[in-house]
Amino acid sequence: MVRLSENMGDQKVLQEGPINRTLGALEDFEKVYKDLPNLHIEALATAAVRVATNQSEFLQLVKEKIGIEFKVITGKQEAYLDFLGVTRTLNVGRDCLIIDTGGASTELILVKKGEIAHLISLPFGSVTISQDFNLDDKIKPSDLFLAMTEVEKSLTDIDWLIDAHKTNLVVLGGSNRTLAKIARRKVDAENPPAIHGFTLSSSKAFDIFAELVDLDKNEREKIPGLAKARADVIIGGLTPISLIMRALHITQILFSNHGLREGALFDYIDNNNQFN
Image (cartoon, rainbow, N blue to C red; front, side):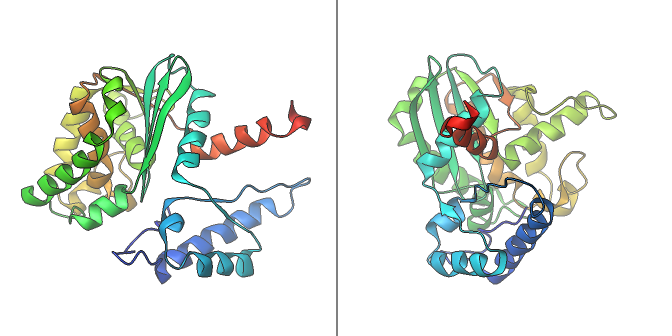
């Protein structure tokens, strides 16, 4: 977790700390792939880089330090790759709503009869919501109210979301998967079920969200299944799916452990004849 969107602020500037964490992660990746034969790298940058005012400087730095040229993809491209990653690896049914909550964006994909009917990328995620509304430590009711109101405004502006009423909800992204990690520990702490394909009722999801809201950051760090590094962004991260479940009367969540990365792989295979 590099949290590249951390502390970007209203000026949308990538900060030194997150940039250095990102470079460190890329250096670790390089140690893994540098000796692989017939290497092809798909290097994709998403929301944080997409909106950054110092985007070009960051991309140049990565090229100089790591030797990789990143492609900055649009929000709709990100949503499409999420669709591929989910639907090629999980039986989601012919109709569903897919939501991917990242650090700085949230993608929604409405699937009808197995095909994309609508998709959108919204400019908020677990890191930005948590930082913008002070949801990182002890939660003030007024801050949570303002956060949920702001996110709900964006969601209710999407006219086609009404078509997802009572549909299957498939979720991915770090915060959403953390919800699954917490819930599955409650099922079996010693041998928790796999995240990919795990299901959870909305009522149990709301109970977990309420439990987390009552705790401060240090207390959340002690919750089994919740990584310490996510304790300060989990409330903002779960806000979008909580509102969607409530507004669309969703009764159950299906979790996917595959998304953008797997979607990029499938997209590459689809577009290269040697794999057909």
